[in-house]
Image (cartoon, rainbow, N blue to C red):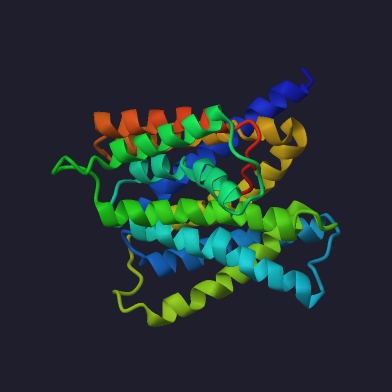
Length: 298
């Protein structure tokens, strides 16, 4: 039976949501043997090794002009190196499910930056209400009035990562996506520069070296090869199949996947505050989403 475009789109959405949503669990497992800097470096190196053969099989070439590589270097820092490292640091203090839920605030940060940088007129009442609701959701997730709320420092690391993603969307839309270079090739170049950005973090890290836990090595391989490398290719195919608005559906599914996998496979406690806060964030995102920049990568 031939596959219809609708069926293909649903399969791609499910695959990408599973990959992106499970990334937070793989990070938690990989941290059993790797420092955050080692994990980030290995993840991006493996992702680049997946994408480079795809570029060559498509008979494409990496950019040759220094200007494009300069833009890719900045994108690699704010879209990959910084947020990946921040999420790894965050998950040394908060659960994988919480990290995935906080990641859902990215569209809200994007809206805030668009307004701050005056790239959009005054927000509509619905957008303003959605942003306020998302802020309330974040506050509920953190629950600072409770002694057993999530770790503030770890949560702020994850919020910083989400802010980096938001900033990267605006930067890439302005300086990279209009170029006559495929998204796969741009992504490969990004991961190459991002891998290089992580080298200084490796050199200044004073934490214990690489461990031997087999589940951590397996998690790193899955995170790098599938969750980083293959996910780029699937995201590219999804945007081509469903368009930007259709692809944005993944944003709503990722926190559900991360919370579920963390609870089932890592015995993480999912409190009522986390569930309520995540639901409020997603509702706020839904209210602001219609004209927000589309997600690019994770």
